[in-house]
Image (cartoon, rainbow, N blue to C red; front, side):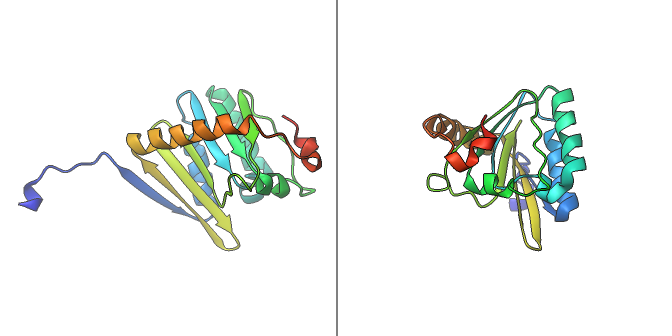
Length: 164
């Protein structure tokens, strides 16, 4: 009887390993329709390098993707490296939430009907994409609540070099 039930393929899950996997997730994000929102735990150049990040940024701009990002202390600290190159993506905005309000341990992005979660720590580099409209809509709702909350937080003096 179970085998005769219609298959429900409304949810797709894709799993990625390694730096190439993170690059694939980012490239998939350049196909966002209109908007890409997310939480950034650490700066992406740290894992994919400057050259790839530049290609990613140019593709977002070429495709007219508007990005909004919530960043925390750990992101700003990760951008303290002398190798970090600040790159502003056109049609992008970000807000700051301190780690005491939102302790991030990974990056999470939402676009179209996809939620992308990716993580790198030491030799553990992985990511997943969940393609499901209801899950994406709920994550958008959480993001919008935190985005409004972030209006109340100003960058601490030590991070003023990142002024928006």
